[in-house]
Image 1 (tube, rainbow, N blue to C red):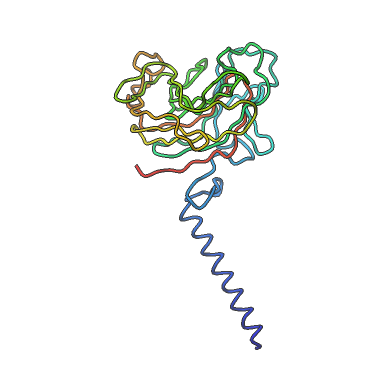
Image 2 (cartoon, rainbow, N blue to C red):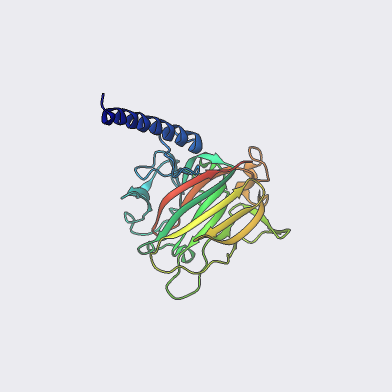
Amino acid sequence: MTKVQIAGIVFNRFQGVLWILCAVSTITLCGCTAEQKCADSGGWINLFNGRDLDDWKVKVSGYELNDNPGDIFRVEDGILKVSYDQFQEFGGQFGHIFYKDKFSHYKLRLEYRVVGEQLAGGPGWGLRNSGIMVHSQPPETMRKDQDFPVSIEVQLLGGDGTHERSTGNLCTPGTHVVMDGVLITDHCTSSDSKTYHGDQWVKAEVHVHGNDVIRHFINGKLVMEYAQPQLDETDSDARKLLGTMDKMLSEGYIALQAESHPFEFRNVQLLELEK
């Protein structure tokens, strides 16, 4: 056997060992299933696979769970889209699409952009408006005509082309939080973010630490921080959950929102953290 042949055998065996090590490393570091491919070697997983909505549940106000009227939530060109193009007028079809599993301590990141025009009849505040719901109630527990899940909302707003309009804000349907030691009962609180006009892609990230601190980041900048998310006992939907959920929220579901204006989402990824 020549030296060239020996070298070839050694190289091929090295390639085989390297492939096995890479495969094991990917499984160990990422902990991903076959359906949930790793986003990178840092342990991030893709919640949205870019092909379909198989891992998600749809709840639209006025409809049963997993009814998706007019394909409000759909996948096109690898993007999770919110669209009302099959409706002539908005009739209260507030919608949320929930990931199948609940989480407690994690980082969530995604990119979003606002596109098109708001559906006629949509509320004024719904203009260029969507959100990420965290620590949400299970979609199965929502009333048929419930507009918003009891949750903590990371509000996503697009600029109107003229006025300042922050994004990464906080809204609290059926909930309260604590900021600087004070219980915040206002429904929405503005963040420190800049305004993003047009249809540019914006990066949003949420760091959720159970019932401790929650932080909002927009394009890498910290814009909002609070703690102790909790059920609002004066809210009728929240009161109904007290038998099955703790008042102090330490876990829940993640959902993306539809509020009458078209939105697009991509690269929806999650990294679980140590509790």
